[in-house]
Image 1: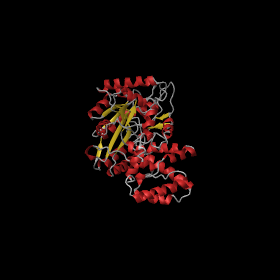
Image 2: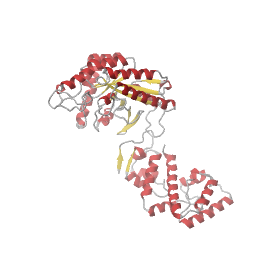
Image 3: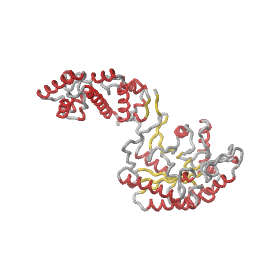
Image 4: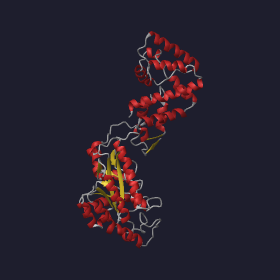
Length: 470
C-alpha cells in the first residue's frame, strides 16, 4: 500500500465561510519579513556570503569571503527600508516574520514593532536554506530561535515561518507544540488544519506571488506600478468573491531591503489607499486570523478518514459499496490512498477506477451480483440493506399488481437478452422513470447496454458513499 501525504483536494468546490469579524468581505494580512542581520555571512559563522533576495540578480555565494555589496543591500533594509515601511504601516495590524538573530541585532526596530502593536512571529534562527540541514540540527535551531525570540521580545512566538524550508520543517513546527499557527504553506487562500501524528495544527498559508521577492527574480516585478497593479487585481478578485459569499484571505509579503526602496514603497501606499476605500475589509495579523479560525472553525477530530483506516475496518465499511464485491474495496486500500480519498467524490472515483481496471469477467460478476428491481429477492426480503433502502426510496417496495407484473416482464426480457439484470441508480429516479428506462434500454444492443450498466453501478456506488462521507 502507499499513503500519499499531500492533500490536493483542500476545501473543494465550496470553500467554507470564514465569518470574518464584522462580516468582512476580505481579510488583508501584511507581512514584513525582518531578515537583515540573520542572513548568510562569514561574520555570522556561515561558510559563504548570502545570495538570495537582493538587487543582484543571479548572485552566487562567495565561499569563505564577505560580499560587501550583498551585506550593504541587507544593511539598507534595516537602516532605511524598515523605517519607510514602518511609517507607512504603523497604524495597521502587521505580522513580522522575525529571524531571531536579526531581531537580536536590531533593538530599535524591535522596539518600534512592539510600539506599533505588531505581531512578531519567528522566522527561524537564521535566514539560511534548510534543504540539506539534518533534522536534528534544524530542530535545535528552532528551539534556539524560540528562546532567543523570548529573550529579545519578552514572549515566545506563536507563529512560525521558516521560509527556506526542508521537508522536516512543518513536522518540526507541529512537534514543537506551542505554535498557534504555521505559515510554511502556499496551498490556499484560507487557513486549514493539518494533521501530524494524530494532532491537528493550524496552517495560515503565505504567498509568493503578492510578494516583493519578485523584484529580485528574473520573472517578476520591474516597477512599483507593476507591483501595485498585481496587489490591486488580487484584492479586487478576492473582494468580489467575498461579495459573492465566499470571503478569503489576502497575504502580502514585504522585505525591508526590497519594498523599503522608495520606488517600491509607493506601491504599498497606493494599495493601502485602494483597500481602505472599500467597506468590509479586515486588516489583521496572522495571529488574529489564527485565533478567529480556531474559534470559528475548530478541527473536527471525529470525521471518518478512509485513508487512515486499517485494511479490515476499511473493507468491512466499504466492501459492500459494490454489490457483493469486496475486492473493489480491497484493491483500493492496497493501492495509493490519501486525503483526496477521504471524501465521497474522491473515494467513489478511486473505486470506479479500480472497477474499470478489472477484468471483463470480474466486472460482469459485479453486474450479476445486483438484484432484479422489485424482483424475487426483494419479495423474499433477501436484498442487502443498501439495496433495500434504495429500492424503497423509489417506491419499489409498494407496487400495484400491474406495476409488479410490468417489472417482472421487463426484468425477464432484459436478463434474457443481455445476460445480466437491469441496473439503474434508483435514487436518481421514481417508479415511472425507472419503467421508462427499462422499456427503452431493453432494446439496446448488449455492447451498449453493458457499458450503461457498468456506469450505473459506478453511480450507485457514488450515491452510497455520499450517505457515509461528506
